[in-house]
Figure 1 (spheres, rainbow, N blue to C red):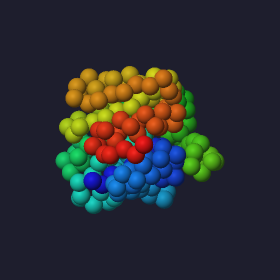
Figure 2: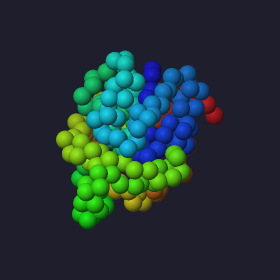
Figure 3: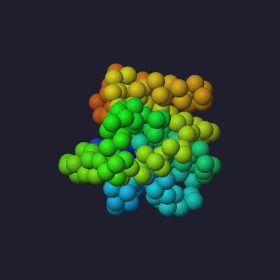
Figure 4: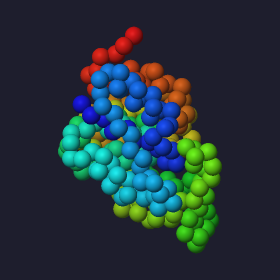
Length: 211
């Protein structure tokens, strides 16, 4: 088995969740790679560009995808068009990406983003504010809110998530009844339920667990 871990927006391969999952997967004898989804240029970030990074990392091989937030949405998008993906694990997946951003930012902020061509956001991995182009939103509208994932899917979502409401994962499960959805009394980061998520993920992937 080979796993690609897909980090979230304004994050990086060094994120806590990425490193915890990678370490535990490697302890279980599983190869885990964590591509930098921005391709080295956060300002030019798009959904299409990130999917191209995933495609290059997968290299046509059978893979399992684990994705957090935007990475979860990307995992679902990629799986929906690539049968070589064997299964997906989605952590607070950012379904409805292009629809939610204008709702979250407001019309005035989106208009300013478009007029300036880019806007500042906090980049969690860098610990500073960085600019991201409007192409992120314009490119994103071509993709469905809920990708048609046919592979086995395991989803985790926090009921207290104020970034991506957990109802989006419930809606995905309604469209894909075979998907497993676990809800936690947690927020968007889900870092306080890492042990439980790992236990359920290891079972889903058929891995031996230590301890």
